[in-house]
Image (cartoon, rainbow, N blue to C red; front, side, top):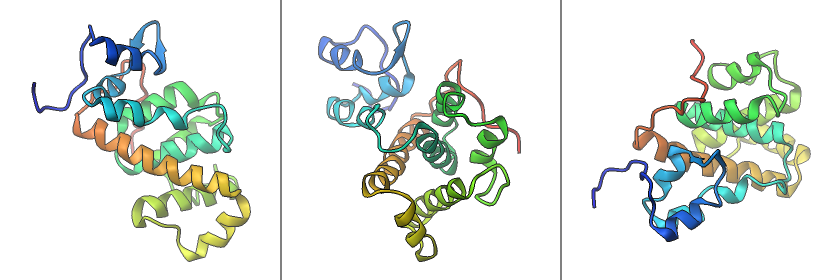
Length: 182
C-alpha cells in the first residue's frame, strides 16, 4: 500500500463501497474528495457527511457562506469550487457574493449586516481559533446555541476537508467552479 494520499479508484472493497454508497453522488460518480477519505475507513465513516443534512439549524445560504469563506481562507479551490457549482445558486448567492467569499471582505456592499457579521466570525475562527470580543456579543444575539455550534463545526470540518483536498493535491472536479481572478 502506498503512503501517498490520493483518491481510491474503483472497484472498491465491498465495505468501502457500502460506505461510499451513502455519500452524495451524481450518476454513480463519487467525488475525488470522498474517494480520498476512503484511504481510512475510520475517516470515511466519521468525516463530513453528518453536517450536510436537512436538519441543520442554519439556512442553506448561511451554511454555504460559512463553507465558501472557510475553504477560500484555506485556499482550497477544489472544495470551494464544488460548493459553488452545487449549492451557490440554491443558496441564493449572486456571482458578486460568490466572488466576495474568495477575494472580498466582510465590509463588501454585497453582504447584509448579518452576513457581514457571519463572515467576520468565520474569519476570526479561521485566523484565531475563536471569535473576537468585538463580534462575540452580536454573534450570540444573532444565532441560537445550536446555530453557533453548527457554524463552529462547519469551520472545523471544512478546515479538515481543505487540509485533505490540498494535501492530496486534488484537481478541481470537471464541473467545479475555479476561483475568480483577483
